[in-house]
Length: 461
Image (tube, rainbow, N blue to C red; front, side, top):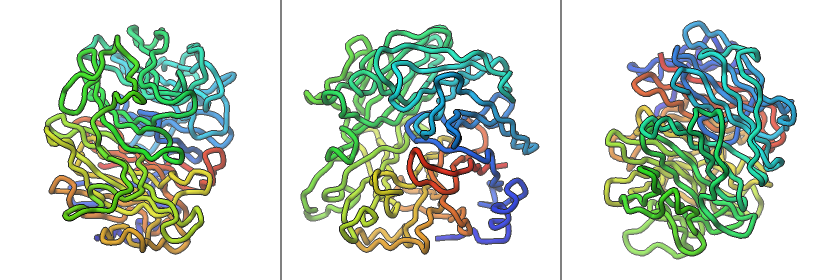
């Protein structure tokens, strides 16, 4: 394990816009504070996008309950915040961060909702390709969907006439789709996507899109505190949802997918309580380990690469802090999923959500690269599953990992070794053909309705 430990790393904590840390000789980076107040959940995307002028637009929820975006210029360090949430859209809850989508003319569509409070979602469209304040956004509009909803994951497919898909949680508390064929000016009635349970069971999907003709997702059976979760993969293309090998499961017109009746995506991770047999180990499963989803990207051949976690309770004792979370990386090789246990995440963030880890993300520009947040003292001691001590002070720090063998091994760089507070939920920003930017939040995070955090970023020059 290589560490980046120098005076500049400490400097960014004191004067964030001044620091320049050489991560590698090819990719010098700067760590900056993007917004002094903000956090997000990881079930809304895109959380951050590149504008046409190269600026970053990052969405988040402030600790006053307002939903906001900051336009950050990497060249000058200028930051401009806009408040999106108008009447009825204010709530101190990190689930409410907006989904951001670039429209063909460079303007931005932002969709957001409160956390399962309302039977509608909100949206705005920027008046300019470079929104720098509240006046640069159109009016807040409301789409009634008839049932309480939360989350937004919005993707525009140029190969389908710029149709926009918004994946959210709505009907039956399940994954639901609304569509727009006029660039966000109006929305279809909601379409029940995956049906599971009778109103409280909810599969947790994570999505990605190539922006042209395909949307991929991984998803669970339910919340991992309630169910022995496996993880499944599907993709949308040509009007249908496919298994990983291309077989059609259901067309868009035939939805919903009946999960409880056995209609399921291709298995990426299979839950099992069985002990390993000869030749088996944590790359296959962790006995009693429940899965949850983190990220999806594409390799150079357009095949999906995914990141997920597995959690076991009472590993080092019988308290909530004795649970342990394990990070995984998996690739579809054209015929099967190859998955690998790659790092320890440490313990959960807090007692009421024992599956909340520090977070992980895949670089969409280079899916051989991942970023993780962990508070494990020995995060890359993969021989141990039970002996997983924590950092002094239990602080979560960030690492960058790169693989050259499909995920079997990684070379790791510690990015925030001198940080004195938690560094959480990294998200690598899509920027096809351009430099990578990673955003996260740092500070004190006690719960999804109790945090005092600032939005940070690492920008390749």
